[in-house]
Figure (cartoon, rainbow, N blue to C red):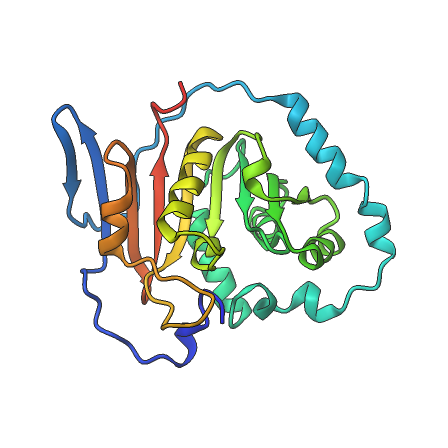
Length: 261
């Protein structure tokens, strides 16, 4: 069972924290935590950070070298198109999640990397919803079958079969949809902090996580209750939590301004 599967048959459960948008700002004497404001908008601070173009070119070239071979393969249709293969009960839920992510991303003129990208369907969603705008997108996925399916489905995608921790690629935005809810065989909060720290060091504007607070005890998956995550996020991190869209699923946006300038 994947991230949103629990929504199909699980009865509604009481939410222990009121749905809404939460923000926290570092201050000179600690942090200020604001109650729900009724809006998911938050100011993000951009800054200049020089990208390592040689490393980007190297990894993109590695991604492209097998593309022509992929086009010749016969990849099963379910692997290319089925939303359940990448953790969604249906296309409607998948589109809903991606629209939610896109609320935090400008229309164009940005770079983005997708951690645990699956087939790279977020890339396809951005292209479809924004018509002629081709996103400057790089996806990372460790499962070869999904990488091959993504390269077959999206002609121009940059989808790398690699662990994102190996990548020095710097982008304006980093997205991590449900990846942290999978059990990676490491200490949960150690893995969370490793992911957050790597993303902070390679992101200019914002990191967008979609997390499930309750995976209903499914083996191989981890819960990220809000009460816990609020205590584990470092005190100097400025973030927004949007808990308005789905039962037990929330969007955590970490605003980077000031970290890497």
